[in-house]
Image 1: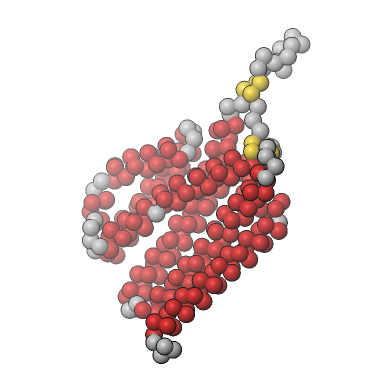
Image 2: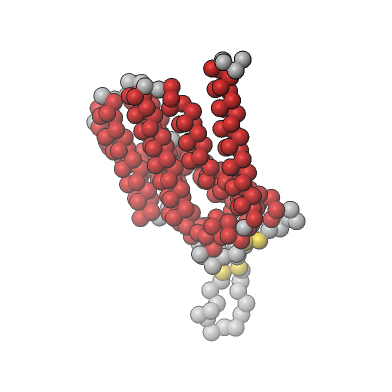
Length: 245
């Protein structure tokens, strides 16, 4: 039994899974131990608009803290998971296959970092600013009449709703950012080629504008910036395609 190679592979899988889940739970408990810090990190794009969070149910704050800790732990542990995946499989590949695997892994990490930066520093602040613009208050401060406002619609954010919005938006953008990886797979299998994309750059520009229109609030500068970013990704994919020709 102990001389069977399958036994050693299974033992290695168990060991790596143990390290992975142990690291995940350690990260989770560290995040859970610093509730103020992790809530500030997640809510910083919204808090900068001088807004506060509330929770309306007795257990809402507790479950939201668990959800935030899980979200941050998942993001932090992704590179660790990729490392164990790479360490387990790399010994079974030839040299040329290792180069391709290393390229795919670095490409995944690059897309992940771009996604996090795009969401955290660009999309979330713009979306919060756009949604907060729907607050309605009667303009009486410039009037000489001492009257009460006719109507006032003010916003008070629930921390649970904000976290759900972040999770949904991150999941959507994560799926969109996997398109370059999917196209790389199509390159490797000779299903598509560089000429198909290089001769249809107008269509790529149109697709970039469509993506930005769905992801970003209706603000021209932000939409153009996101569209340029997506088009830049497509140009990188065209360049990468030459390595598979």
